[in-house]
Length: 368
Image (cartoon, rainbow, N blue to C red; front, side, top):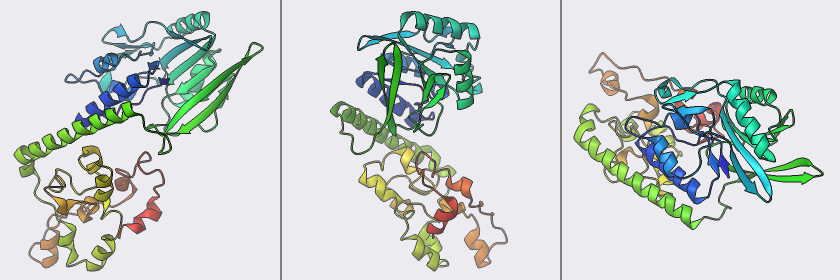
């Protein structure tokens, strides 16, 4: 089993916890190799050694042309034996450049010489070559065309799975998508000296039986996240609350906008917190922020302390509405203009990963 990179979350305190849980699960599932992509690079901080965490997982790092503070991550291709076949695992960062924010730690060797030497070693010592390539489709295709003889290519930089493999100069390009929605499986056959491959995408849905070891890892992750939530709440009470005055609640808007309120309270937005409670994710900061109103910024703090701000209420989309009531009642001549409610605003939460069926023109009519 291998992962071509881009598995790391966006950096945050919770991202650190998630990153470590993912690495632990890779070890438990006996992964043979993982690659480093831009998201893994951006996890590295002066205060958080992501590479050290990755090495501690004991899953081999396979990226051949990336260095960390002068030391190459992997010095030569990994050679595995499976079913009497030698498999050469190579990984290259072909995405063009290291992110600016990561250059203080990471460096890229983009020379053709490095790629040629490493691929030559793999060809000499393996029957079959599998390459994990970090780059978009055009960058990956160009690399494959320059370097013939790679049997299977696993792409890391793709948001959607490739339901049909792409063949480029006899190299089979595969991608299982993102966010762990699918597991890609490749069955390899050899007949008369010729390789043939059968690719299958396995949906990782409710039909897949839970593994006790992974379930316990996820439970520990949730425990750490719940503790983080308590720490953030404590910090909010001690340091942050004074910076953010309370925002208006939906009930504050009800007296003037009763028709809109009555329609809204029957929508999924109004009951957004309920799905988190049902799945025990109501203490998960990454989830709370899109299921409540102004989380830790003058609105929702926790289910126990501020249930009146649960759900997506008026101000979450229309802004804090500072001065709105005073202006409308005639006691003030000033009102801060609310933000424009457009597709970009909605896509902050209705991302392709979280809501791949979202359609702005259709779904905006369901809000109220």
